[in-house]
Length: 76
Image 1: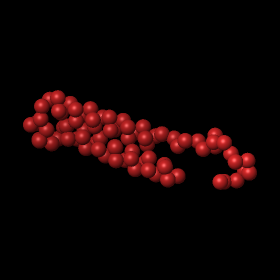
Image 2: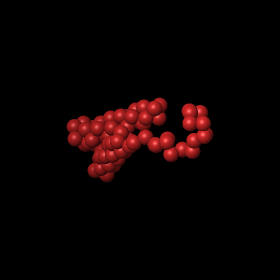
Image 3: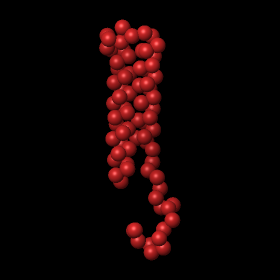
Image 4: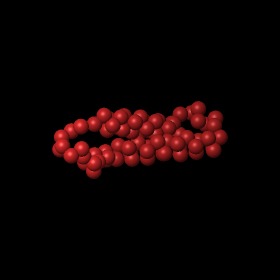
């Protein structure tokens, strides 16, 4: 359960970073001073963060039932 919460927090941060990077490429005037290569790098980085965030958010937790049991049928 704790792993899932950490995964969702990381996904949320990646989504936020990605959205900010994508918004920065279209709205903030300070990016006009950067080269076209730098603007492209910001856009690609933002897209990568968005993709990773979506992947983390939608990823299913590892199935722990496939782990070998101790034989007593209870929790360790």
